[in-house]
Structure formats: C-alpha cells, structure tokens
Length: 270
Ligand SMILES: C[S@@+](CC[C@H](N)C(=O)[O-])C[C@H]1O[C@@H](n2cnc3c(N)ncnc32)[C@H](O)[C@@H]1O
Image 1 (cartoon, rainbow, N blue to C red):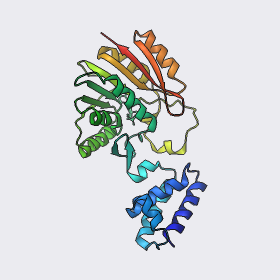
Image 2: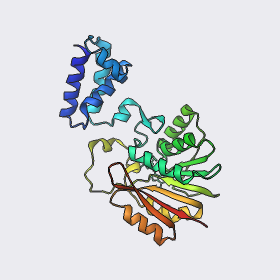
Image 3: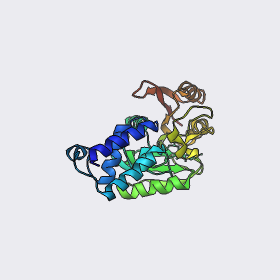
Image 4: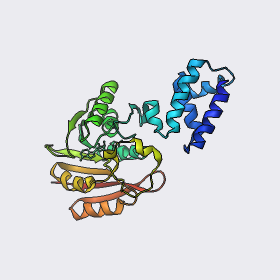
C-alpha cells in the first residue's frame, strides 16, 4: 500500500468514526508517525509504506478512531507561540483560551514586572504563554489536580519558562498583590450534549462546581488590577452581572472568533 492510499483509507475510517476533520487528522497522525511534514506526505504520496511505518500509523489512527483527542494522540499541541506536551492528565488547551491570554496581556501592557496568577493551569497553557510573551512578568499558577501540576511542570521545564506552580484550591493560601488574576475554570454543566472526545479529558477540568463564582469573590482579596475569566458562552452575562454586584468596575465581555461571548474582564482596586 502506498502512503497516499493509506492516508485515504485512514481518512475514510476516521470519517466513519464521526471525527470532525478526518482528512486533516489522518495527515497529522501520519506525519507524526512517519516523522514527515504535511508537505512531505504529498511529495511521498506514491511511495510504499513499510510494515513498521504502517503499524505505527495504524496504532495512532485507531486511537483517534476511538475519539481520543488528537492532542493526546500526538502528545503535543500548539498554543500561541508554544508547543505544549498534552496528555490525559490535563485539558487540551483550546483556541478560545488564546483570546484569554491576549486579553490578559492587554490588561498588563502598561505594568512593569506585573504579578500574574493563573488559576487552574492545566497543562500550564495560560501561565506559560504569559511568561513567554511577557518575560518580565512574575507568574504563579495553581491547580487542584496534582496530575495537571506535574504536566505543567514538565512543560515549564521543557520550555525553560519560570512559573511558580502551586497546589491549591483556587486562590486558597495565596497572599500578596496581583496585577491580574486570570483563569479558565471548569464551566461545563451536566446535561449538555458533548463531543465524544471530552470523555477522555479529566472530569475535574470540565464540570462547573461553582469555581467561577468563588473566584469572582476570592480574587478581590489579592487584586489591584484585573480579573480575566474564560466563561461558557451562555454564562457570560451572569458572570459579568456577578462581578458588578461584587463591586468590580469596568466590566466587559469579549467575543471569541465565532462571535460568542467568552471572556469576562473586570477591574478591582482595593
Ligand atoms: C478548564 S481547565 C483549564 C486548564 C488550562 N488553564 C487551559 O486553559 O487549558 C480547568 C482547570 O482547573 C482545575 N481546577 C478545577 N477546580 C479547581 C480548584 N478548585 N482549584 C484549582 N484548580 C481547579 C482543573 O484541574 C483544570 O486543570
């Protein structure tokens, strides 16, 4: 079987399994298994696959066919300017979270050596992206999940980025003043229809257990600056109203690329 034939058969298999972007996923999986770029997949289209290559690619395609997230199968995922290690210990960083980072960076643009805390850091995505894009920032990141913290630590070490990682329930035990509290807390509600891939991600990273409301309350103790929160598209108005009710000022909501309200920002001065 040639590489081109194997790719086509794999894309058809993934389509039958309900994968959203079967051709793209097949290409990325083959490129990973064969250590080729996607362009090279095309230039090598007619070359036969040897047994070792076919076995390696098939194993990855089968995992994806079981609807394991592409990022877990590949073991790494791009987030802003970083490539993060990704596995089942933490949520796969999403494109909308890149907008959260963009908003957080905008809020600290004028601050010198800003103090930043990322609550519920998962892979470390938000904290590490801010540390990379604002090298003068002093970044702390918390998570309740020891597994997520271990993965975030691996990412920080591989990327040689300085982030202080703390095992904590939201902001419990934290003190000092921060220019920004940023978070993508869990915000899925039971009863929502979810893509099959989410069954592979940690439940504690997905399901809302009141973390957003607690953060709006608790962040006031530490903030002299901005709270920047990723929210469920259906919850943005409620979170913005809660922030106003708790005395925050300059509350605003930013839309994601699909036009859904996904980021709430609010200012707190002690
Ligand atoms: C939606 S994921 C976000 C992960 C990462 N920030 C990202 O955007 O890709 C939420 C994260 O919050 C963590 N988490 C959930 N409840 C928490 C709590 N009470 N305190 C600290 N972290 C919590 C989860 O373990 C998970 O890593």
